[in-house]
Amino acid sequence: MAEIRATKRLDITGDCCPITFVKTKLALEEMQPGEILEVLLKDGEPLANVPRSLKSEGHKIVQVKKMGPDTYLLIVERGKAE
Image 1: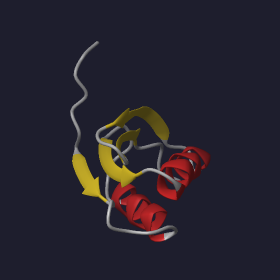
Image 2: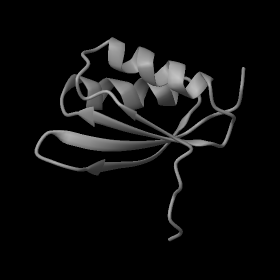
Image 3: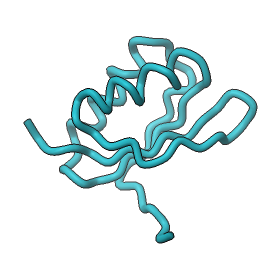
Image 4: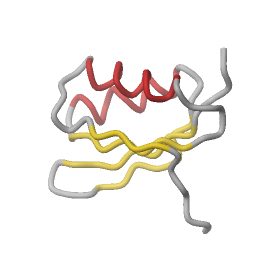
């Protein structure tokens, strides 16, 4: 499998819901369709809510990878502009 190259990275491990989704959505709005965003987030609400909300907005969840005891890396491909 080819290595995925991120266009942008975002660390929201210090934020709480719903700010986690808001920051991720704003980062994606600055990107072009097809570009890749890496998001570092915490387990729990952020891990449950951010991917689900992004998917419902038309973005593609490429991968979710455990990075530490309660930290995950979410790789998102920007969907088509509305």
